[in-house]
Structures are given as C-alpha cells and as structure tokens.
Amino acid sequence: MDTTTPTPQRWSLEDLFGGPQSPEFGRALEELDRRAEALQAVRNELKPGLSPERFLEIVRQVEELSDLMHRVYATAGLWFYEDTQNPEAQALLAQMRQKSAEIENRTLFFELWFKNLEGEEAERLIQAAGERYRYWLEQMRAWKPYTLSEGEEKIVNLKNATGRSALDTLYDTITSRYKFTLEVDGETKTLTRGELMVFARDPRPEVREAAYRELYRVYSGDAPVLAQIYQNIVSDWKNEYLEVRGFESAIAVRNKINDLPDEVVETLLAVSRKNAPLFQRYFRLKARVLGMERLRRYDVYAPVTKAEKRYGYDEARRMVDEAFSAFDPRFAELAARVFERGHVDAEVREGKAGGAFCWTPAPGTVPWVLLNYQGRPDDVSTMAHELGHAVHGMLAGEHPVFTFHAPMPLAETASTFAEMLLVDHLLATESDAAVRRQVLFDQMDGNYATILRQAYFALFEIEAHRMIPEGATADELKAVYRRNLEEQFAGAVELSDEFDWEWISIPHIYGTPFYVYAYAFGQLLVLALYKRYREEGEAFKPRLFRILEAGGTVAPAELLSREGFDITTTEFWQGGYDVIAELLEKLEQESEA
Image (cartoon, one colour):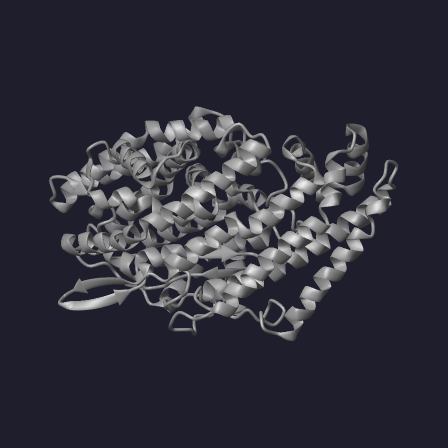
C-alpha cells in the first residue's frame, strides 16, 4: 500500500464520469433517458410465451439501466457528503432523487408484470435467466403480497423522493451545520461533531462530561424540529408499509428487505437483552480500574491509560495494510486500490458529513470511503472497518447490480472482521503493555457500542414506531428512551438527563429505520467466525471468502447454514456473547492480578 500521503486527503470523483460538473456526467444523464425509453419500448412484448432468449435480453436491459442509475446517483451523493452545505451539490442530489423516482416509474411495468405471472410461467423464465439472476427474480416474486398496482407504486415512488428521503436529507443538512464549543486547557475551541467526540475519550473526567454536555446542548436546542422530522419519517413508514402494503409491524419491513425471518431478529434482540448484565459487569470492572465508585454515562468510553497513543495517517495506513496482509494478500491488495484510485476522503473540515462510510456505487467500481481522521486508535479501527466494507464490495463485484451488495445483516461481516484483524496485529506488535491493555478494553467498549447499544436502539425504534402513530409527543419519546437506558445499564452506570435526547442524534434511525440491529447481528456473527479462524487457520479462509463473494445472491440464513452456522437458534447468538464473556474474564483476571 502506498503510504506517501502524510496527511488525510480529499477524494477525487474523477472515476464517476469525470465528476458531477463534467460534460460526461451530463451525457450520462441523457443516456439514462435513452435506456429508459428503450426499455419502455419492450412493454408490449411481455406476454405469456415470451421466449427465454428474449426474456434474458430484457433482463440485461434492466440491469444496464439500473447500473447506470446507481453510478449517476452516487456521483451526486458523494459530492453532497463531501460538503453538505454546497448548494449546487444539494440541488443535484435532489434532482437525482427525482430522476431516480422517474426512471423507476417508467420501468416499473417489468417488475409488476413478473410478479403477477403464474407460478409455472415464472419458474420457466427464472430457469432461462440462470443463476446470475435467480435470487433477484425470486426475491421480486416474494414481494408480491406487498405490491400495489402500477399507478399506486408510481405515486409511492414520487412521494418518497419528496417525502421520507427529503426529510432524511433535511436532517443531515441541519445537523451537519452544527458547531460545538468546548473549553480545554483554558482555550475555547470551535469543533465539528467528530472533533468534539475525541474529547469523549479524554483521560480527564471533567473534559468527557463537558464534551457530552455540549453535544446534547446543541442537539436538544433543535429537539422540537429534529423530533418532528423523526415523527414524520415514522408516520410515513407506517402509512406506506403497514397501512398501504399490509405489513404486520414496522420492523417486519426491514426483516423482509434483509430476507430474514422475523423470529431470527426477535431471537437476536431477546438474547441481547438477556446478556445486558454481561456489559453491566464490565462497566463495574471499568469503574474499579478507573478508581471510580460508579461509571457515569460520560465515562463509558474513557481510556484506562493516562495518555492515548496517536497515529499519523500514513502510519495508520501501514498498520491496516500489514494487518490485512498477514491475513491474506488478496485482502490487502483490494484495500490498497481504494487509496490508489484517490477514493478516500479523510480530512476533517466544516460542512463535510460526519462519521464514516463506504459507498460502492455499482459492481466493478472501486468503492469510495469517507473518514474523519484525527489520529486516535479509534480512527485507525474505523479506517480498517470501512476498508473492510470496500473489500467486501469488490469481492462481490462479479454479481449484477441487483445482488452484489450484501444484505444488511451480512453487510458488516468484512468490516468487523477487518477491525479484529487490526486488533490482533496491534496486540502482536505493540511493545507497550499499557497500550495492549487499552486495546483489550477498547475491544470491550467496541463490543458494547456495536452490539448491546445497537440492539437497544432497535428496541427503542420498535417502541417509537408503535407510539408515534398513536400521537406520542417528543417528551413522551424522550421518556421511553430514558427507560430504555435504565434497562440497558441497570444501575451499573449513572445516567444524566441530557442523554434522554441521545436518540435525536442517531442518523441511522432517521435514514434507514431498523438498520441498527444489523450491527449487532454482524458483530456477533464475526465473533463466531473469528473464533473459527483462530481455531482453523488457513482452512478457514475459503469459508470467509465464500461468504463475502456471495454478496446478496442468497438469503443470509441459507448462506450461513452452508458454512455451518444456524442463526435460527438461541445458542448461535449466545455463542457470540460467550466470546465476549471470555474476553471480560481475561480482563477481570489481569485487572485483579
């Protein structure tokens, strides 16, 4: 991996039509319309007895149009996220949302026709399309009970462009403008959210408290507006999916999208709830190590060493490359491509979206990775995590645009595995015992943040989606969230009132309802996978690569079953928590030694 860039860079969008303001991008928009028109022209051919050869040609037309739309949309989306305050980028993203809805409406007839075919006729054509398109076509048929008439589907598509999607963009635009003020060592700093959250891991308790107070001071100042946005997103979700499409519950929609049985998700959340005392035990241990009677919520991510080690950007890149290479050269080579193509934006700057993500627009593309790199160990882990996503997208790049993305429950597999590779590398190469100890505590902090915290977010969403249609106010939602926190921590952590507003600061519950349980699913799955890797070594690698290369071409439960994992059982999920319990016991023994 090239490590010549000493500081975080800004990405280039040249690989997407030369960028959003290029003539080539304008021509791509014109090509979209031409392809949509060409597809519309086949409508009269969709009749019983359609030849297998012609059906396959039409499927390929649908694929090419969808692939192009994904690339065009990503161009606008990536431009917006690099500066959410850029009015031209805001306008282009809104235009592309509208364009996407229009294209979908113009070509909706194909999907509706295929869903409504008789069983034998549909199966004949699925056989003709071959394995490349089988799962996509079968999944299309599986949505038949929730599908509306063509006219109704067109209205829903147009509604979403200016409804739920627009509300989510509004939330991003409002919150990306936030500036936070913090006094540290006598100096008043003006910070982005990412910069502010560095101080949530400061060794000084008073700095951690001040950082969290400032975070929720700013968010709660807009609580009436942010809560109203959320209330409308939830109401829109209910109106479309429960009232119009006929789903039985709000979370069942996400389960269907993820192709997971409701019972699997219910089991995951129930086992997580049952294991909350495991993390409560950890928080009590951490309080003892920090010399505190009880952790405050401000202290959950507190370092156990006095000074947190910092890593230069080029050093972080080298560490991630070494960790990936030690596992498998192919993993490292794919990650290196992201840097080589200039597809990483790691600068911290005003207006840029906070947090981190990986966006793989279409099969065969080298993904784009957004980071806000500040040199903390957590930033190095985030780099490994997002590059894991990128590796996953490239490994599945042989599949069509419909199925190359892994479903959400499996979407965190490569990313979380990549983080664990980095942790093992750190433990093996770090000579400072205090740093190694911090790494182990960071693992427990990460397991809490990725598993239990996300499971409780999902439990809150279930309540919120039930209450909001019944007229719940922002204050009533705040009270529900407080009870959620009280159950989660059960007295092991002292809660202060500002955390009652935490839910309005979580972008996922706005943009992708019920996404959060995928984090818990993915982390527990990877704990089980990583345990097998440590036991089996080289023999394990083909199993992992098969899971990653499958993308979204098979239902998660079936894919994992092929590799020996039964996610329908309580025992499977408990197995993940048992790995965490082993880590906790190790920390307890070392801390008491």
